[in-house]
Amino acid sequence: AAGQVTSGDTVLETVLKEVQEELGLAITASDLEPLGTIATSVSDSSPVQGEFTCNEYKSLFLLKFSGDVSELNFDPAEVEAVEARAIIELAAQLRTQSPQDKPRIDGPFVPRPAHYLSVLLPALEAKFP
Image 1 (cartoon, rainbow, N blue to C red):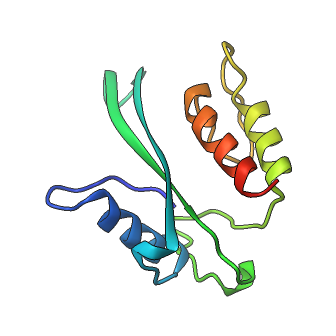
Image 2: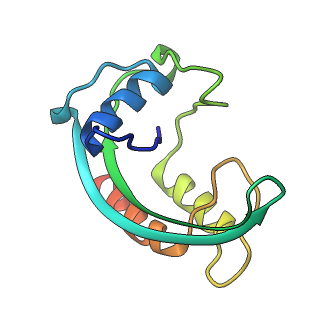
C-alpha cells in the first residue's frame, strides 16, 4: 500500500488509512515494523504538468500478513492485483525492473530507484532468509 501524507496527518496515520483503503485490513501500529525513510527527488515532465521536480520522503514499513491473499478485500480502483511472492523472486523482479544507472523497465511492479531498493530489499532478505 502507498499514499501521500495529507496536512494534519502523521506518517503512521497515513499508513494505517492506506492499508485499510487499499487492502481492506484494519491494522494497528504494533502490526508494523519501520524499515527506514528515504529522501527522493525526481525531475521529469508530463503533458499536463510540464517540467517538474518532485521531492519527497518515503517511509517504508513491513506488515507481515499471515492470512491468505484471498482474504484481502482490496479496492480495484486502488490496487490492480495482489499475489503472494517469495522474497527472492520479488527481489529479482524489482532488480530487473530497476537496473542501476539504466532506464527503468516496465513490469509487474512499480519500478523503484536503486537507493530505495538498497533499503527495502536487505530488510526483507534479513527478515525472510
